[in-house]
Image (cartoon, rainbow over all chains, first blue to last red; front, side, top):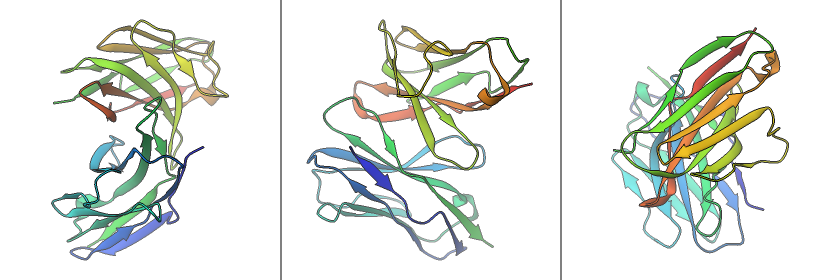
Amino acid sequence: AQTVTQSQPEMSVQEAETVTLSCTYDTSENNYYLFWYKQPPSRQMILVIRQEAYKQQNATENRFSVNFQKAAKSFSLKISDSQLGDTAMYFCAFVSASGTYKYIFGTGTRLKVLA
Amino acid sequence: GAVVSQHPSWVICKSGTSVKIECRSLDFQATTMFWYRQFPKQSLMLMATSNEGSKATYEQGVEKDKFLINHASLTLSTLTVTSAHPEDSSFYICSARDYREPYEQYFGPGTRLTVT
């Protein structure tokens, strides 16, 4: 069975600094998708970034980028120029490309951006 | 695009009553909808998967008679919590899958259920 591990329950970063959130996963499959979601205090789940496993190039979305290491089964999220609005829970999610389309979520990392 | 709504956003009900939560995809047809439960400061826990016109598939440990799911159309799924008890109080989130982006889920804003 697939698992997703986020080993950092809480992190903090100074405004304008850079922070990296870690995510590792376990799977025997070759084709899958990985996502980072942000859940602010409103609790609305917001997609931050997605990565297709077949793509070697790391995904980027403005200040957000990932370091996808397929062999190491690692999928970390880097937030550059952190803003107060980045304060939220961040969840890493895995979905197999063959099967039920169900997400496997990590336990989350609570990020606080300090003024 | 890809907007999912939930109604109500917050509901309070008395113990022993039933409450229905609606999940709608507003601008796409959702071939699959998912229902999650989230406890404070925890991750999302998948309760069930529903496909339009089919019976829902429940995750292990989820009482199907307690949490009734109906996916009657390609834009609407409902979760009914029957004979609610205080321990059913939680935050319930639905998500929907669009066949055009099959591996991505679009999330509703969630419903806070309080059972008194």
